[in-house]
Amino acid sequence: MGARELVELQNRGMVAFDLALGAGAILAPDATLRALGHAEPSDDARELFRRCGPIWLTFAAAHAVADRRGRSEDWWALAWLRGTELFTDALWSRSAAFGTPRARATMVAAGAANLAMAAAFAWRARRAG
Image 1 (cartoon, rainbow, N blue to C red):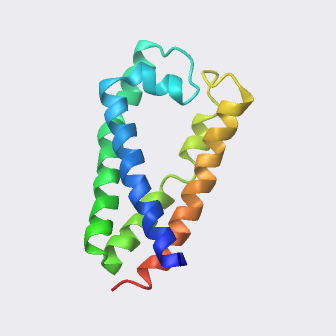
Image 2: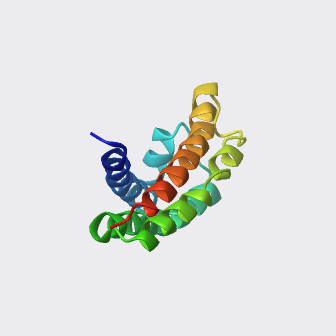
Image 3: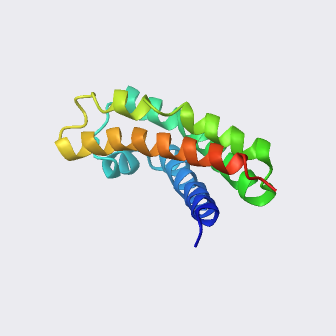
């Protein structure tokens, strides 16, 4: 499997991940937060998390479009989209609700993963077609 196929496989994985995260945030926010290592949320934290569900579903749709169409502009859009997420999880990891070092490290690692995906999707955009 070459680099192009690996990037495309990662993209398809992100369709599933963002679909699950978005649906979980909307339909089962407490369970989804728990899976992320978050403590039992307050009412306002739950609703703030829930409001992110449509955002993640939009991410899933963008990944699906790039998978189906494969146009350069779709891959560039994904690179920018993932770039917007570089620091969000690292900032969120500072919340006292992430009580374990492992949960905090996982959130920081998400930023590194978004950086890698942004670079990979930009690389893929240059090789569209």
